[in-house]
Amino acid sequence: MKAETYMERGEQALLHTYNRTPIVFERGEGVYLYDVDGKKYLDFAAGIAVVGLGYGNPEFEEALKNQVEKLTHTSNLYYNVPAIEAAEKLKKVSGMERVFFTNSGTEAIEGAIKTARKYAMKKDGMKDHEIIAMEHSFHGRSMGALSVTGNPHYQEDFKPLLSGIRFAEYNSLESVKALVNEKTCAVLLEPIQGEGGIYPADGAFLQGLRALCDEKDILLIFDEIQCGMGRSGSMFACQKYGVKPDVMAVAKALGNGLPIGAFLTSEKAAVLVPGDHGSTYGGNPLVCAGASAVLDLFENENVLDNVNRVGAYLWEKLEGLKSKYPVIKDHRGAGLIQGLEFTKAPGDIAAAVVKKGVILITAEHNVLRFVPPLVIKEEHVDEMLRALEEVLSEQG
Ligand SMILES: *Cc1c(COP(=O)(O)O)cnc(C)c1O
Image (cartoon, rainbow, N blue to C red):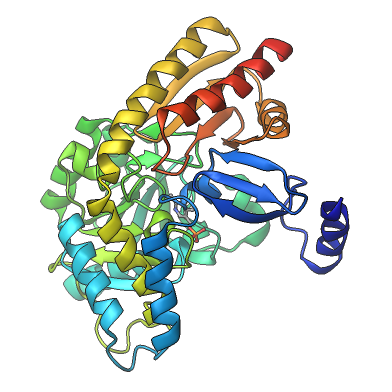
């Protein structure tokens, strides 16, 4: 067993910020992962909703190999072709107008927060603007992104956080309206809350927020980091509802595993100017060549059609489980971002399923989360369900 030795070494060398599942992965192929001892796993987590195209996509790998041989980094003091191409493609699929590339989702949120503060400061010259975020949201772990994350447990040990952040109840337009005042510069939310337990927004809530933000000249910011890039069955979840934000944060599946994110703005919200913001690596040629290939592959391989078809199949099967097992309380989501809420924490269930060779993760305390590669097929859903049902019938 090679894994044991690696895990021991890992625990000696890495900061212990995760209680890791005792698996050491070595390689991936399609929608399967293999550990260092050769054990095969069906991947129903995709590295937390990241590896949309699965492992070993030949066009994606070819694009990266070509770019590695050409140029990997230049800094943003110059132009580079892959960044320009990736930005053009992102504009096209999102309907947004300006792109700033980051190295992560968290950094995309930081850029969105700065955009909101700057937009309002330009408008009224004041420096005490407030952002309304949502309870049970997740936006990242840096001090800014943590400040807008509606989870006191993540925040508690790191205070003081950013000032001027208020939390509204998700899907309650009234609770947002109650917090709006002359200082409010933005409303920030995930169109489908991911880490918080797979809660989709109501269409009327998003449309109401759009109207509210227009009326008050406040920026509407959507965090599409987890629910975007095709996962909901639309390229971006907000497109399902026909609501366009002023700023959108993207990451996760954008790079299919490469560290890249972006915040996208409308022309109106494109307020950051030279000196306001920057990144040494952000949008470097290597990661942008990858993202550019991802965006091409989404189109060429009809990824959205697959998400809608297999997502509907998964939906029907999970509905079946829900009606059969009383421990399953609720079933939520869209496309290939679905969750089953249990009456008790399903950590043990997930762990038992993993032992059977299917990678499943949880969200919040009570939710089993299904965020597989977007190229998964019906037969893989069946394979996952066989393992899950065995565990459910064993554990009752
Ligand atoms: C994962 C996630 C983030 C943070 O992204 P990182 O790439 O981990 O920095 C922010 N918002 C949402 C909705 C996420 O799912």
